[in-house]
View 1 (tube, rainbow, N blue to C red):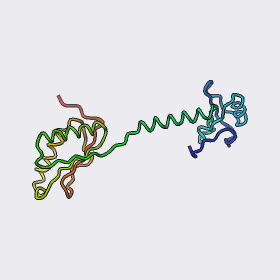
View 2: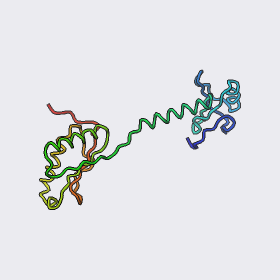
View 3: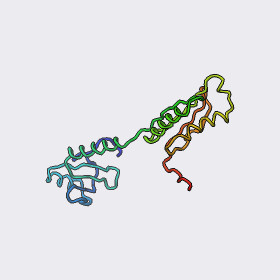
Length: 178
């Protein structure tokens, strides 16, 4: 819609309109005067619902009912929108197996809810200078414990506090090999 304001009755500027109503459906292309007369006879309004169409589309119905239907549609659309958050989990190099399993379970829950998960392998002090292969193996150990299907959104990157990887739910997982 080119403008936010919906034109009704005498505000409609088009010469001809494709007119529809609730009972009979499509009434065809009518002049604006004819459509207004028809709406007045029925005791309802003429509402321009698609001003950019050629010819513009107008609907014969009560304007209050039209506004109510539009607000219901908008509310339903807002309810269906899901915002994706990036959840963070921190793992240290010496984290025990049970604690890793708990964090992996939490990551699986986040993925199931549709969130992205940022996993930080925290490296305090001298552990930053350990063999990179060893560090990546530690991160892989955590990723293997996650039960949900996922893909790596951002590959492992070394930062000032350690190594970070971002994963997200895989919408089309590959079938398991037999």
